[in-house]
Image (tube, rainbow over all chains, first blue to last red; front, side, top):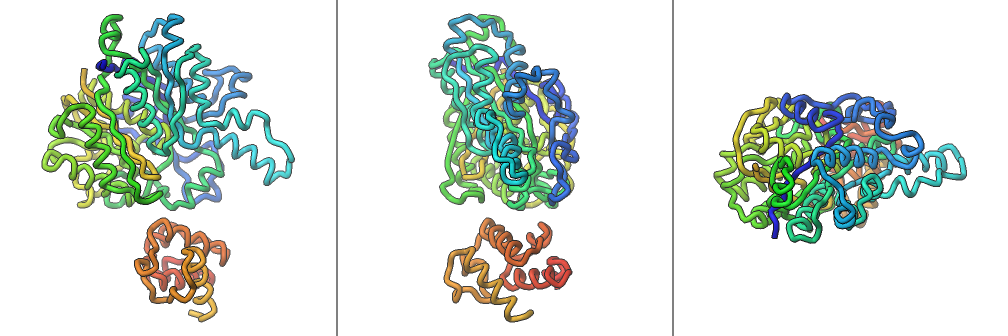
Length: 402
Length: 88
């Protein structure tokens, strides 16, 4: 069994085109939520989202290549490029052949599909673009990353709604820890700002008409986000040997299923995932100094997650911080777990709790230290990142300061 | 509230919830009918389709009873707001 180091991080989101910008926004408590630009929201009950502002493929992909890659997979590749460069990987043919790529995505390229179906159903054009299928498939992110770097080892995609990226990172962590692969590129990406998808979210009545206020009494729902985030994982001793910069160690991964309801969360399921993660990391609840919460800002999630945290941590829950960075980067669905893993890594590496932005009024049902609105300096050793998906499929990651 | 409208609302609820029509009365509670939050959202969608109305999220959040659902539909059909019916 290897200890596993995070040697590369990359991200693109509403909080910036790279991880330095992401870190700065998290530290400043700056929200990336604004009026949705990439879809017409005239006939929607919500207008706000957390988009990658003014995104255009041209700095990243030539037109011909971009034609083959949906926006969600472009984000996967952009984040992977940054993570690989950050890790300073020196590729050998052996390493390319053995490395893994495990990505998460919830809706995949449904925006491409939406546009194609619009032609068929609405415009009466009896054909869709031949790239609709290869652009829509949820594994397109992993496939394009593999082609980008010539990585030919085990590559696949996990789709577990809002837990997708955390499940992906957890699998990658276990593969590196057990020695199955010498390196893994893992994370998630999402780009759900297409009219049909937004309409479907509207129908669920969980999207806020203004902004995302996790743990606030006057919270009014989630705000959708987009982006991509990737980590490079490798055995700690190998990373040390090659003199790599180590952002943090990944030390635990736990999963559970609520087996309860397709949309309502269960405190018991969330608690079991957190306990499984502590057990996997061989640490006790008292070790934890920070939790990056799932914290969607919906009526259902936040009190349920609070009681799950209290059930696992008891009195210790009053001695650590819990924040939801979705208040800033939005709910990026299949990318959420990866963006939030990076936020937890920053908390450990740089010694600060990212805040819960947009916080207004405390809710007795969410009575944790949620770091309202302003980041706080703090030296901690261990952090968790919670992902509690629709469908009751939960994934929790544990990181350690290096 | 007109009896015809009430009967239509109760039928939509029964059909959506997949329960016998005779089980649903204007005074039934959500609990009695096994209606959870997702079922409630499904029923509002069915009511919107049946009556060609749009039920705002704010009003939807306040609805706790079958009677409020029926009154909300009636209010929206009369050109008012569902919220006004709920708070009355």
